[in-house]
Length: 226
Image (cartoon, rainbow, N blue to C red; front, side):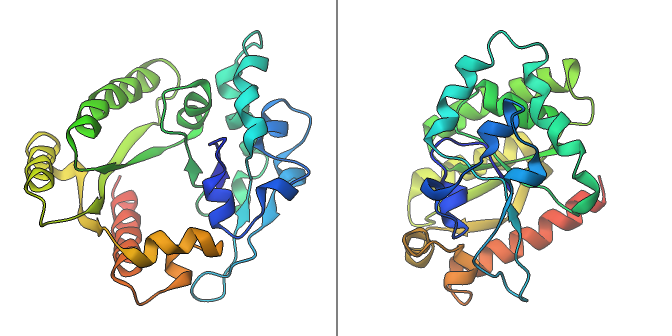
């Protein structure tokens, strides 16, 4: 798991204290550390007893964009770094910030596919158009391997008419690109970060955790057919 968001939510949610990290993805982007040196092992075991590696992030990452402005091929720093460890993993997940920044561009330049989580609300639908256009531009100019794996509806409440309408619009315009799995608004998922654990570990029996497991299975099957 690569955390490219300065907020470090993916890091903390994996049971890793971002404040205690000696090396982060910031050091990797500035080439003062390798991925192998900066990665740490998740303290929280996922179902089946398998832990995973985290390339963590903290507030320090927010300054990376300024420091990388004058660097050549700055959008390919993460890609170059991950090539050294690529063969060690079946999947590398990259958590990008919710903005179209240089950090996001680094993530898109080394990814094979994009999963877009979105709430079924009007502004999210409007922002999706900009993101899709950015992905198309990155595909055309920087990463021919990049494609959209699918759109994931999250924090979904079927009782809200607007969310149903936006969901219908998503399926109308994007068709098969919309995952069949829907992640419901779930209290247990919301509680999980405060315990420093992924939702599927904190309460595997909750509706939210079960939905994420179903989504993971659907995503893997979709990737196999790409």
